[in-house]
Amino acid sequence: FSQPDFFSETPRYKTAADPAAAQRFHTASEEAMRRARAFAAKRPKYPAALYLVGAAYQNEASFQISMNNAWLAAVRAGHQSYQAHRELLALDSGYGDAHFVTGIYNYTVGSLPWKVRWIAVLLGYQGSKERGREELELAAAKGDIVTDDARTILTLLYAREKRYDLAIGKLDELCKRYPENYLTRLDLAGLLVRNGKPAAAVEVYRQVLATPGFLEKTAVYNNLAITYRSMKDYAQAEKWLRLSLSGSSLPGRSRAAALLELGKTLDLAGRRAEAVQQYRLVQQAANFDNSHREAGQYLNHPYREK
Image 1 (cartoon, rainbow, N blue to C red):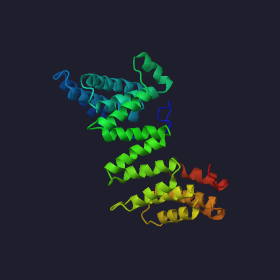
Image 2 (cartoon, rainbow, N blue to C red):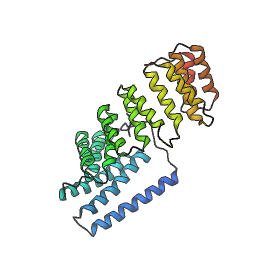
Image 3 (spheres, helix red, strand yellow):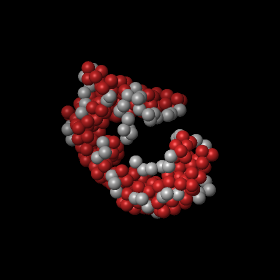
Image 4 (tube, rainbow, N blue to C red):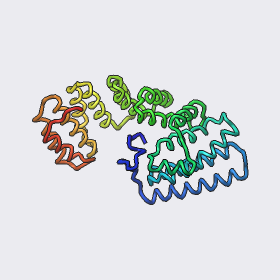
C-alpha cells in the first residue's frame, strides 16, 4: 500500500498467496458479511450492528484489492462498508471508530486510476483524499478499537505523499504506545533516513539492536550500513556489512544483499578492485530479487550514488 504505484493500473508489486488460503479467506469473508447482515436486520438503527456490517465489507474490499487487484469489486464492497458506517455516524456522530472505514473509502476512491474511477463516479461512488485523511485523523483521535490501525494507515499515506514529518509523528505515537514492538522502530528509522535525518535513524537502529531478545540483527546491520553510507561514513558502513556477513546462519537473501551493498560501499570509497570481488561473489550465489543483474551492472560500471 505504501508503494508509489499501489494505485496505478499496473502495479509492480502484487501480493502472492496460496490459492487454498485465499479461498478460505474469501469463504470466511462471505460468511462474516452474511452473519453481520443477519445480526443488523434484527437490530435496526443499532450502532454496533452497523459497525459490524461495515467491518465485514471492509475485509472483503481489502481482500479484493490485495489478493485479486479487483478494483471494481473492491469499490462495491467498500461502498457497502462506507454506507453502513455513514448511517452509523448519522445515528451517533461521536462513534469515532466508524471514521476509519469512511476515511479509507474516501481516500481510496479519491486515489483510483482514472480508468476505474470514471466507472466508479458513474455508479455514484465518489471520494476525496483530503476528506479521507481528515476522517482517519478523527478515528486515530476518537476511536476505541481502530486508533492504532488509523495511525498505521496514516503513516503509510503520509509516507507515500512524502510528508515525512507527519508520518514520523504517527509512528512515534505507536512507538511510545508499544515500546516492545521493534517493527515500528525499524519503520521509524527508515522514515528518518528518507526525511534526511540519518543520525537520528542510527540512534533508533542501535536501540533496536539493544532490545532484549531481538534476533533479526543482520537486517539491522545492513540498514545501519546503508544509513552510514548515506552520511558518507564508508568505514562504518563497511564495518556493519562485514559484521552481517560474519554470521554463520545468514539467510541467502540477506547474504546476497549484504555482498551487493558492500560492493557499492567499496566502490564509493574508491576501492574498485575489492568492490568487483563482492559483485562476483553475488553472481556466484543464488539469484535473489535480480541480484545477479544488478551485480553485473556494477561490474561493468562502478556504483555511484544518485
